[in-house]
Image (cartoon, rainbow, N blue to C red; front, side):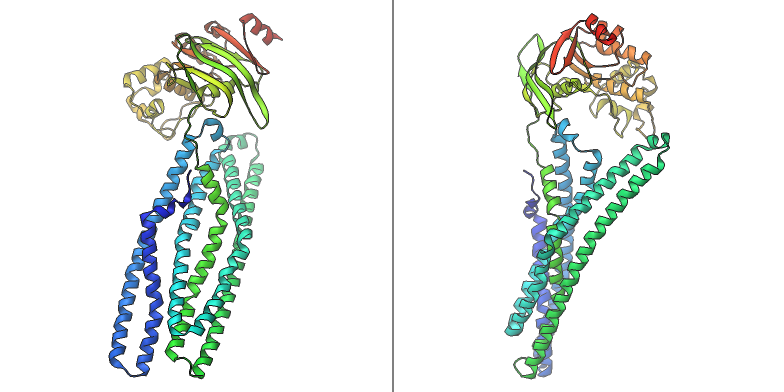
Amino acid sequence: MFSLKKVFRSGYFWLSILSITVVAIAAALVPLETANILNYALAKDINTLIMWSIILLATIAILLIFESFSQYFSVKYSNKFKADMVNHLTISISKKDWYTFQKKGTVDYLSYYNNDIEVLEEEYFQSILKSYQGFIALIANVSVLFTLDKLLMVVVVISSLIPMLIPFIFQKHLAKLKSENMSQITNFNNKLSDFLDGFQLMKGFKKEDKFLNRLNLATENMNESKEKHEKADVTSNLITGVAFYISFIASLIIGAYRIATGTTSVGAVTGILQISDNLIYPINLISGQTKTLMATKTIRNNFEKLCSFDDKTSNYEYLDDTQNAIIIENLSFGYNDTKILNNVNFIFEKDKKYLLVGPSGQGKSTLLHLISGDISDFSGKVLINKDIKNGVRLIPQKSLLIRDSVLNNLTIFSDKPLENVKNTLEKFKLNKFSSNEKLQAEFPNNVSPSGGEVQRISISRTLLDQPQLLLLDEVTSALDKENQKFVEVELLKNFKGTVISVSHNYSEDSLNYYDYIVEINNSNISVINKTDLQKKQAS
């Protein structure tokens, strides 16, 4: 279970804490030493005056040295945990199955990387150190106050508690406003993504004004939510400031009275007023950072939830069988209270070719994802032959090229004989990419394949991986008739292995390559013959 509390196990964190402690103690001693210097100056005790002046200079030197240490360790600590958050987020995403992953959009994940991690680094990790800095400075200064004047110490401490309580009054309101602002940032990123990704759609339908209005509205909502949070924060800070100055004035009046009555010294009151003035920073720090930490609670909980994952990576059970490739037993799956597949049973034999047909929305593509392991949350069993368990590959309808060389897109960073790569490219009429120069060209900067070429590159890289079970989800939908025909020959006739294909775009010739035509309708799965299929198409 990932937890942001791992921050407390960092060496850099505790080195930062040590440095901050030394700085706070040294800073608190400066008013005490100043008070002694003033009192011995008034008493004309030159030797003691020189001694306290040297002590003051040494204290300031220590303060400056450890302040630099504090800044250094703080930066190291912050950068380490920012890197850890990115790493944990990336690992947790990679552990999700396809079905769980696609519940969130790409923009949502990018928002976690670009927004939430930045917020947590600045407003959680740094706030922990700053809060401690405020508390230790407050304790150190109050301790010095105790040595100077006990009564004034009580006055200063009591009056200082009021500003520290103010953040708790605004806690829930600020947290709610911060959460709303983060939601509006995500909404803006989604609308921006629609504007950029849907540029051709926008231009084609001449709807620039509609797209711009959606983006402008999202921008306004984002800025408005940010302004609401900042206004509430400013109000809280203003009240805190007023409370502190009331504390300062009370200390000044009582201190002046005690000097007038001879119950304390000028040096003591001077030191107390200096400390009281010094308390502005730690009190404001505690107040501000407490508000900030509380406001990030929802973001922290959401991030920890996203970064938590189950190590279970597959729901496969394995067959020791020489005849069958896949056995489906009592398989049920659905989402949003809608059953897609209910108590489905079927056997796919090894090295046979299957065409899945049926009305849209009956679970044909879902079945492919269940077999491939893309979906792990289902009931029933998917049993796969142990001989092909590592050779299952799904080719989706919409293929993706990564931002890298053509060669890496084909091999997915694995070592493949260059001759095999070139032969496969030629087999799928992708000769234009088979030269050494083109293979090293980077997509999309230096090479721009068409939609059909992208699909054939996707098919090529799958076959280069030497699969034993192919799951084809409308793989020829982006191809013209000529390319569709030879791709079907390669995948159905020449491929030596098991094929399960979903296609509405099959040719009459391709039907001859299938061993079985399987119909899925209302969770009923049955084998039909070619004549029955043609009758259904005609009707």
